[in-house]
Length: 618
Image (cartoon, rainbow, N blue to C red; front, side, top):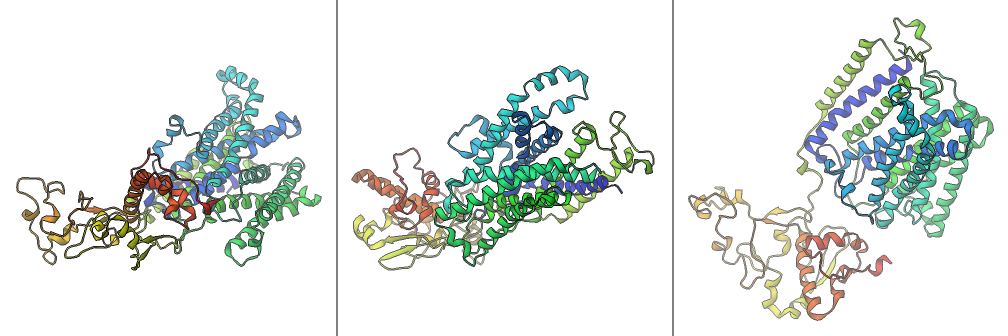
């Protein structure tokens, strides 16, 4: 079997497997097809599909700038393949992003609802605009086959230089803006990867990856279609790649010394090992190989060095996009097979489209021809360019379709679909605050918390009579129930009423008519108040009454109660600093990252709430 047919058969198999997973993803949501959680919100789909995919498409603007801006015409033969690779790379990024978004049908919102202060806004617009520019740059190639499009093609060709200039600008902005995303989360990225010049390092590494990808793609297609490799031409790209990667290593290591983080390079941590492995693969090995003239001018040397560089830089994007993020103790993210299947399927689809285009349009100076065509029976040949199109018609479609269907069937067989709402947020029981004059509230067990001076608050608010301001509800036959007794989970609402227990013969053995009046719908709204039976449920003078049978999450309950009281006191005493998160969270460095969420949950957005950056973050 021919090399191309073997590859296509494998690709169609992978696409079929991904199709089954994609169906489950869009029918049942993220929770059915991913191991991502609140503790691990970024994984393979962001690190590889988006960040890695964008970097892999960097060869397009590099080659077009080389030929059309710097007028190095000897590289003209690789312009079309490079632009096609970039176009399909960005298209794959856009498709892959649909799988990662919780509500993918809202992806168009950024076109209408602008947020120019967000790096994601700039990234999204650059992807859309550059994808449009790449489509226009490549349009003259397929248009050659359709005489009716000659006029449009001529117009686009005349606008080639402006398109190239716009494409270079958009691509450089976008490549660097991916690094800008992490500037706002310095404590969510390990110091070996975080840097204030991360956008610069992203751009430099993208240049190296673009050069390497051009070499890799050229040798791969030459191998598949048994074309003569462009070894001498690609040697110049190898030399340029060597210098780009050298600059990257110097900048990255120097940045660690400037930020006084170089000591991390020598500690015995798995992240240190990952850092050195990443640098070795993406830089040291390619630089060494490209430094020898004999290796740089050989097919095997170019292909080997380019492969190392491509894999290493993609690994860097995956590390920055999720692997190098610190996580709470016990939180571990391992991509599910469904996540990997989606990523591989998107890439496989892009490769199939690439092979289709180079076989049916004049992407190369000469179209690919099958060297074994003479030995095949009834080969299909393109009458214009003698392009071999695979096995004879029906046989090809049957073989690939069968592989697709069988792989999809296997994928559906292995899927274990769970409701989306059962995944994503793990139950986190609240730890009870330890007693005494000062309560240490560390509900989510992350080592950070609030030293709540209980006795001082009680005296300040009016003594024992003020307890009802906070302790607004008691459990039956209890007085002064702790908050965590009802708000039992850190992040999830819980059932505070336990309807099944009340109706169960082994529980309260309450009949329906005892709570629900006859002739009315049996709903929580129509039920009698809980304190009809439980007299001490709501203490006299409590400022909060029972409105529903679910207790909100512990964090939400605390923030509503504490922030609401502090805002009121700040207005009464003209002390706006009381509304600062670090007024209570003295040692919680990442509190600023969640301040907007805290205010929104507390219903305080739009008010004059002062939230400056605490000293721990300066």
